[in-house]
Amino acid sequence: MTLTNKQKQYLKGLAHSLKPVVLLGQHGLTEGVLAEIDLALNFHELIKVKVASEDRDTKALIIEAIIRETKAVKVQSVGHVLTLYRASEAKKITLPRTK
Image (cartoon, rainbow, N blue to C red; front, side):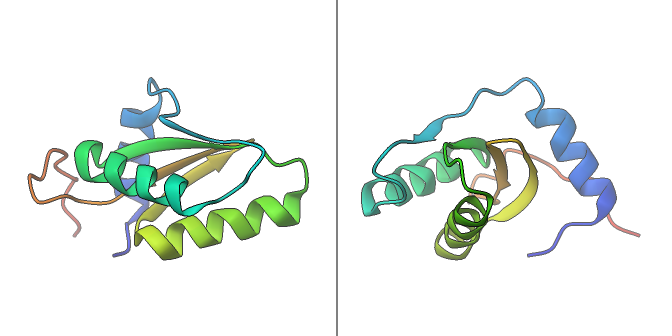
């Protein structure tokens, strides 16, 4: 799934007031963390994940792995916080229409 710039801007606005629901700790990206992110995406559709890694390259690899494993779309990444979107069965968020 790909999002248009208009859809990303809309999701960024919705995500602005959200707090991270999943925090990656010292053990990094584990099966349990991925399962928690997947569960949160199924329930909320739009979530924030805090990736606590000091190394930029490591953080980029972790973000790529999260996106690949959860099949979510990266809305934005600011500092250590990653915003993800994945539509669920219930369709809680209605995205703006594309042209």
